[in-house]
Length: 180
Ligand SMILES: NC(=O)C1=CN([C@@H]2O[C@H](COP(=O)(O)OP(=O)(O)OC[C@H]3O[C@@H](n4cnc5c(N)ncnc54)[C@H](O)[C@@H]3O)[C@@H](O)[C@H]2O)C=CC1
Ligand SMILES: Cc1cc2nc3c(=O)[nH]c(=O)nc-3n(C[C@H](O)[C@H](O)[C@H](O)COP(=O)(O)O)c2cc1C
Image (cartoon, rainbow, N blue to C red):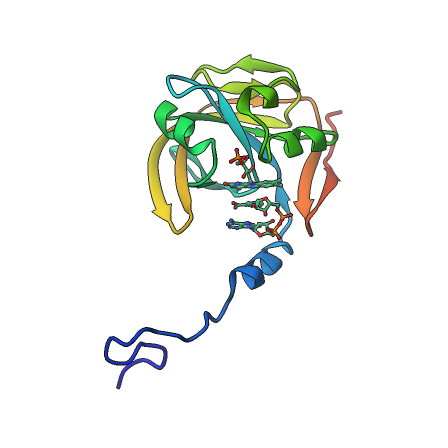
């Protein structure tokens, strides 16, 4: 007996998906996440985009993943350069997050904020809570996105203890302990 959801005899499956894109996004809006600006530079040019889909994979070797929409204007430069710097935003970085969140030409994005060049050549944001300088070691295509596996080759911890959080389609600030 076939499983209950399989199409019959090769006929097109017209069953609506159990979870729609809108339903998925509404559900995802309930997950709070740190906001990052993922930057790149190299032969493909300087670029950067705002990303909340960033996650730790393993500490051996230290690896993060980033989900990048294949339709983003940053996708070509990221793949050509093979390096990224993941800059985790602090309180007060909302305008920068919106600037890197789309529709602005890449060089205009970097006109705001103070940037230095990390060891890989990717731009590192002065004032980030933390910045991870990375080489992309693997890319896996899933639906609309590429999952970038990024080996961390350098870390810079900033002075801010107030992290920018995206939750319920709005920005929030999360305060951590300060150094004594
Ligand atoms: N993973 C991604 O690609 C994300 C993309 N965005 C982009 O920023 C815009 C503004 O975000 P919201 O105000 O939260 O509006 P929204 O209602 O479109 O998204 C709600 C939540 O769904 C998830 N999401 C949104 N677009 C997605 C995508 N294409 N693939 C996978 N997950 C996605 C994210 O967790 C997001 O916070 C979105 O329309 C989207 O284009 C935002 C967050 C994550
Ligand atoms: C808060 C926030 C989080 C986002 N997270 C992601 C993400 O994780 N992955 C992604 O591909 N795009 C994400 N985006 C959308 C990209 O930042 C945006 O599409 C990107 O800058 C490309 O736009 P462009 O094609 O105009 O350059 C996010 C946007 C915002 C405002």
